[in-house]
Image (cartoon, rainbow, N blue to C red; front, side, top):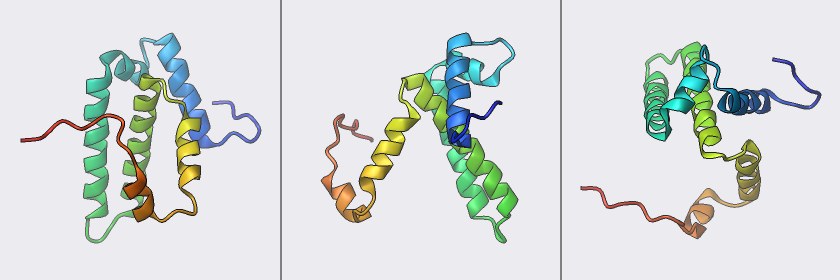
Length: 120
């Protein structure tokens, strides 16, 4: 991975994922996930989130394991964002918008553009 000046690892990772979406190389795990579609990617995000929670709940916590599981989750979220055509800059903009605002106030101010289906 060739790093451009001022480009961080998150940006490099997202660029690689987006490149895989365009090229879909046969020997790429990322391309295979993207080809599998949103439902498969969401399953992986859910699986990785669960593994992160499990790692955090270990006693004693293994920092190495927690870091690895966090990286796995971030990678799979980036794949989901790329599949949906959402640039990393949009996430950065949203996080920047939230600075200086109480988390409770920010959450209360949200308007959900798509209502969630009722769950049984």
